[in-house]
Image (cartoon, rainbow, N blue to C red; front, top):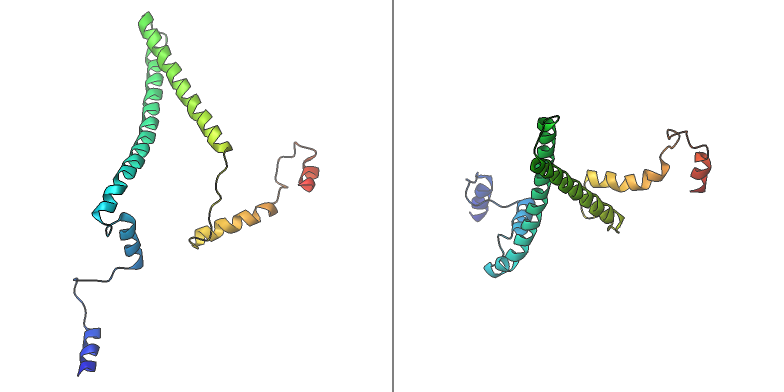
Length: 163
């Protein structure tokens, strides 16, 4: 009788009540901290706020620079060839200088960050097709055909052999 009941339960369709979570859904819940205690969530809150603030400031900086660039272009278009007061001329020049300094600072920071050591990617964490291709691309990089390169350097072939 128990055997028949178990067989019937196995063939019976389950309604949308309690369903088992997939592995992906369980990982997502763990990542979001659904099962974490209230103390753990409270301890993480300052770090989450800090990360959120940093992301917001990055986006805001880019938006403000775009806004300033648009303002400079508008002033150039609107006031080109028009007599303006000395104060307006100073304001326009001030905005132009601020924009130039801000973009120069961003370029400097990017060049400094580009010169730093960067940890290599870990290819073995997730062995998806995309990661496999990236992994083998690094190995195949040295076998690329350089014959399509610029022929303006007469010593190119010698330099290739010296590598």
